[in-house]
Image: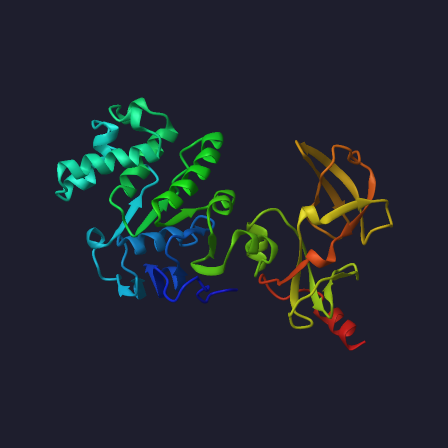
Length: 373
């Protein structure tokens, strides 16, 4: 499990979290979080419900005060500063637009509340509405807009004040799938154009992987791994990350020299630094599997079902000794029929071995015998 701060470009991160811990009564929400986020970075906090990501975001915003640890912005302490005095803006899941105000009045609200001059307010509101493509909707009220347009207004209101850091709490969850996909690209574009740091909380792995420069995966209030989307997918640091990020075939066994010993006695080749005899899991992505004739691969199985998904087909195969169906992704419309016997060839160079953090594996004794022999 990766709990230390991940390296970021430059000598000093924009945002640094050091030893952040927080509890709600007897429930520990955060466990000593260390994290660095760079200037102009699009960063995602990703994890299942209850993992601590929203508590972490609210602590950065100033709505929660962590029991332990420090929050630093540009090297300066932020932890005890009240929310309204932090150079941080937060865009809420509900958008929280004023229904009786027009689009331009909603965007201008924060500037006017700070006493910004009328000419400056008009200039900055005009600029940001042009950036998000809503200039012609300036006089409309939120009820006259689509869900995607309301999301843009909320974003405009957040960035018009030029915060050093923008926090987004599940910003796309209220949108339907098609609009959500469009807004993922839009958020990334706006982040680049605004030239500021975005930190987004989401439980949607596709959302995090498509938008973020780096992603922190949380589980039970702890950091499992911090990496780029490609790094998380191709080199997961734990069984949890491998299972949570993308689709993966997880084959549990025991670490031996050169691979993972399965219950069947087969050793799946994989490079690893795990202790011999320790519980381990081989992570095989669906696209790293090729179907062949029975007996010609390292595993044999029976086709359970096939799914055509445009340019690719997904094939589910029942493999003896493997609890879940083995999933293969083929770039072909010609796939074996249900009930067919097939062999599976696995790309050993792309197979990742991680510790099975659910507990010691049942094959430890067998593995020790393999090692000693």
